[in-house]
Length: 229
Length: 229
Image (cartoon, rainbow over all chains, first blue to last red):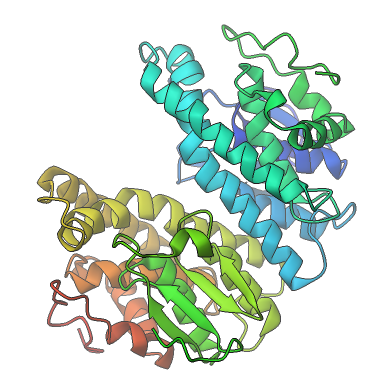
């Protein structure tokens, strides 16, 4: 951690392979907002997470002299203060659809897939909490297929998840799927539409920082950083 | 269910004592949008919840010929299409604070208090799922105190939770607390600031429909509908 950086430096306290941190990283990068990434291994002694965010959650963004928490609130704030390139559409009903889908991934997909699978296959190992529970992993991986089918049903008549332009909803979804892809838990052959969508978003410059992530002790799948997967 | 109502009727599929349904009901009432409330007892055979919302959650709002889901996305949509009275401030940083606090209650407060306490003390009885687990109830009621302290810390230098005007954050918080108040699980003597805030919001006309709720088999606390509690 570079303690000498001036207070005007924008800094994101994050952890690799957190879908909520990744969503904010994607938004910052897409809007070309320079940010200093500081890893907060909040499960280790000495973490100051509660001082930065009383909710005890990451990410926390230090910006404009404040500490900002809650990934969706942060992303909407960034889109309002730095409107270009826009990640929210103009029409109210389209904005509704973006927010509905962000909640779909950050709430439902997270509860059914990301949290159980990542907890068992990554966080238990990193935090030394014991062995993974294979039934939980299996249930999560089974739930992915339902979600990929749902995404396919959207992408059959839309270019992006919420409509014909790329929005925050695509970043929310890609943030979750990219964590699972790191440990090779997404079967991209399940839907050509979803694979094509992920290839489009993965090839954006904003995605580069995520593809360079490396969590000590947990190696990325060989195809993880490949744009042709 | 009134099947003869025209398709232009705004209809909310909801369940009493759901904080997410209550948040949307408060917003609709505050904005004087007439709505037909239709109870969806989604745990009983014949519920069409999945046809209305593939996420399988309430509330669902039928409006403008569409079925809208996800309470936060619905509330922001309502505030955009019917801006008066405004429930979101103008400044980006103030809007951020409203959204952060909505997430605080709908995510953290819900996981630590509302969901465990209401599941054990209300939904298990209503859905015939067995007896309440007293340790879960006790943990939830203990967590309330921490949250009341957090609200007190905000209200010591703000008139409302997110600042000096009433916003969606107050409705989100009041929606959760009103469910717990129905079963008498909020100790209002814990903080004079929080009690005063709740008295202010409870006395608004928008709150009346919530105070008239009655869930068969689960009786409201005697003080539940009293404005002087």
